[in-house]
Length: 192
Image (cartoon, rainbow, N blue to C red; front, side, top):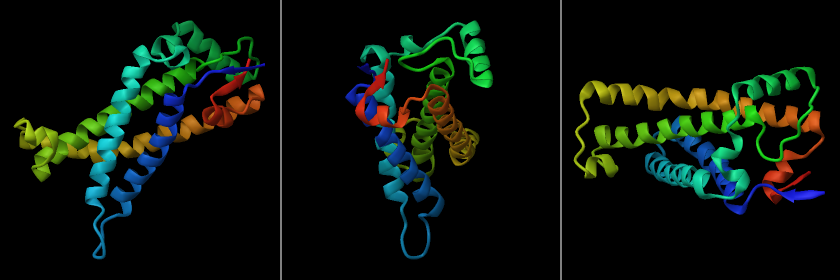
C-alpha cells in the first residue's frame, strides 16, 4: 500500500537544492576565465540556497509529519541498531520517513549548508562590500574574514563527501529494502 511521505515542499526543496548546489559549485569551480565571469550567478545561487535552507529549517518545525525534525531524532541505541542492520542486512524495523542514519544525514547536510551560506554572506560583505552583511554595517575583521574565506572555499569538498555518502545510503537502502526512494522523492509516496 502506498503512503504519502514526502510533501510537495520537501520534494521541491530537495530537487531545487540538488540543481542549485550543483550550479553554485560549478560556477565557483569553473566559472572564472577571460571569456566570462560567473561571480554574479554564483551569488544569486547562494541567495537562493540560503532561502531554501532557511525555509527547510522552518519547515522542519511546522511542516508535515515526515518533514518535521522531531520525526527523525532517535536515541543513541537506535542509531547503533540501524547501523548494525545496514551492515548485516537484517532489518527488523521499517521506517516510513528517514531511518536514524538518514535523519542524521539530513542534519549534517543542513548544518554544512548553513555554514556554507553563512560564510558566503560574510565573505561577500568582507571582500566585495556588498550583500546583507555589508548593508547592515557589520564589521568583519581581517582575521575573521580570512577564516571565513578558507571555510567557504573548502567546505564544498566536505559537502561533496556528505552528498556522496547520502547517495550511497539511498542506493544501499533501495537494495536492502526493495523500495525506490528516488521515485518517492519525485512522487511523494512510499510503500508501507
